[in-house]
Length: 514
Image (tube, rainbow, N blue to C red):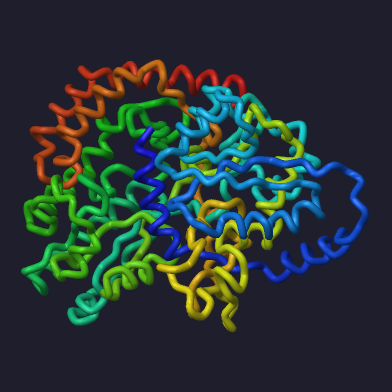
């Protein structure tokens, strides 16, 4: 598994700017009617208290206010009292394990890129006994494909977070420079085949030549993540099965060594050619400076970025530079993409039925979603005239007592308000459409447990650190260094990792009649 914490913190920064949400009027009205129907009714059932181990990016003082408002809804509607137990992302996995082993009550836990590990440690309870009754609403809005990503041996173990998953590889380029030199990106297409992907790279080669001539003091590309321009480590229909060290073949039957493939060699040819021509930052393999810093300081005209909707707006907000962003590769939704974030019932839960009731609310009730996302209306946020929300008068990011900005996490983001007056209020319909039209991996639902080959993986990561950044930024010549890289990976044990993945994949297919 990749370094989950780093990915989640990056995701928090990106999505908090791009994919904030708005409450659907119809859903809110329907929920309001249901609440009125139950409000004041005599409740003969005992209220059950569940503990929600809630990962947070920062400690906030307003948690108790949010908890109280949530319980005003859940106690009367579903006979559930929720205790919010905030835990920092940095400590989350360790703390949850300690709570479970120590006998502390913990009912609702969060997946933070560790679904397979939670299963391996028997920390998740199968949801099947409650799925079609208490969780029926959540099951319906998630749909069969999303639930496949958390299904093991025909049992559902978690609900993935419902948000925009179809992040596409895109190119972002400074708009003023394009306009001033009559350079168009219109020939770039959303590639669905490798040939179409290569055609995009050919077109970009022509574009970079013009950009470099127009702005010789700038480079065309800088890395968006350390040691990688991103485009060499993906292609149409790509499922890296969690870590790139053994990827799924295009027909979905075999686990193969991507670094030995003709496709990888072809992509390395482009990046090395661009590097030699000066299109790529010369210390791209080693720089730790953020891509946006290069853009805002005028040292680059752009970069590759993987994201959903609103990328141009996000980049301009962060840098002050207007950019044009074009998607160049159809996204593939894989198991790890979908189940990276989500929620499950603890195997030690005292009240699993009550936990499922609350989970269902997190996916169907906009009032619950927005309390978790933004806090208490009038205290932590107010509604704007355009349907968005923002801080109340006198409150800002520095003095708010909530301000988690984690709308990308809590259940169904499509029921959330959009933060920020003037923001695009159609974004969720586009995110949903992108989910619907994305390519899905043919082995959606397969999760790989790397425990048996952890020593080999440790050695492989060391080899990647030696060769990968240099190759994937064009710094190293693939004609001489790629064969060395492949041989070093084999010496480190990549064939054993591939064999283990293949064994697990074959077993999964047999168990799931694939």
